[in-house]
Every structure is written in structure tokens, then in C-alpha cells.
Length: 130
Image (cartoon, rainbow, N blue to C red):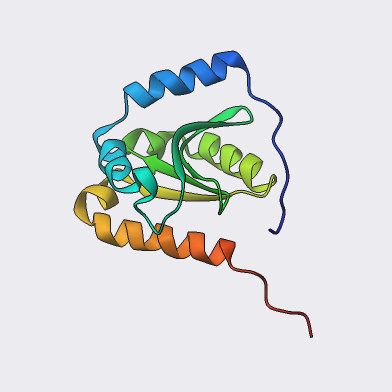
């Protein structure tokens, strides 16, 4: 897989925070999780509130190294912070996909199709060199 880097172990505090976040998911996160859990989407393993380095990803597809971030209105004020987080993850070989709450609430099927398409693209082998 292209750009495969590792992220050092996360702290016990961050793992505890992730556990707490799993209990307090937003309505949009709960809706998405209900459709991602248990390998429902193309047989993919998706984790929720998963620590990656110094961050906690809302959702993470291990096979595709795809981070899914569910953004509500507060993210309109956190543009710089979100950009720095995305850059940190992308530099380590992850792809970050941002999904607005409204997209999940209004057209979950389209969101799921987009997630699956990105995962399949990232997991497909590169074309042979000529």
C-alpha cells in the first residue's frame, strides 16, 4: 500500500478519551455507525473513535487507511485545526474524508457509496509499470 507509515503508540489518556467518545457519539455519528459496524459496508472493518497518534478519528477503515471525520457546525470555526489534523494524518499515509452531518442525515446511501468507492480505490493494487 502506498505511503504506509506507522503512528507511534497512543497514550493511555487518549485511549480513555476515545472510549468516552464512543459513549457520546453525535446523532449523525450514531446513524453512520449503525450502517458501518459489523463489516456491513463491503465487508470492511471500520472502527469508531479510534486513536491514531495524537488524534482520535471519528471512524477508521483499517484496510484502506481511510479516516472518516463527521463534521458538524462547530467545524466551521475549526478550519485551521482540522487542516493541521488532516495534514498530520496524510503525511503518515492516511486519507481523510470529511462528511457533514447534513450529508449523513439527508442521503446516507450516497455517503456510504462514496466511502465504499474511496476504500476500494485505496485497496486496489497499483497498475503494473510499463
